[in-house]
Image (cartoon, rainbow, N blue to C red; front, side, top):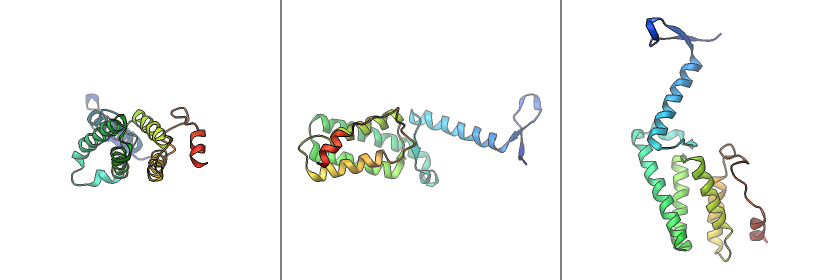
Amino acid sequence: MELLEYNLGSVGGVSSPMSVDEIETSDNHKLSDKKESILGFISQKESAFNAHLPYSNFIDKESNDIFAEIKANLSRSIQLRDIKIGCRYWIVQLERYVLIYGYKFSKTDHVLLVKMVFELLTMPLQEYALVEKFAIILSLLLKKKNLLSRNDLILPWRPLHKIVE
């Protein structure tokens, strides 16, 4: 038996029945539209716990600012070839970001991050600690199989095989 509620905001004062599923879907759609307008993109998988924090209305802006800073400084450290110190620091910050906020970035950012970390991982002549850290971050970014499909991202396996040899 389907539960029905009445929509009081209908045209002409006539109320029409709406199912609970339709109400939840419309509420979720309104929330996602609001989030998209605040963030500027459709988030992939946010941490569910952040919505229950007392300052949850500030989290979207805060996470956006932090992610922009991580992206900018990570790319800057790669361009300056500061892999050992700068890149490692910002990779750790990316790991913390994912652990705190979840995968709160767009799919294109996700794909670009995976490709960048993969390139860092497969660079020749690196220290073992850096290779290990890049591998941990790559596995963290690839952990949720439902976020990236095979059409979104294809990585070659041969460079990884060379690292193991």
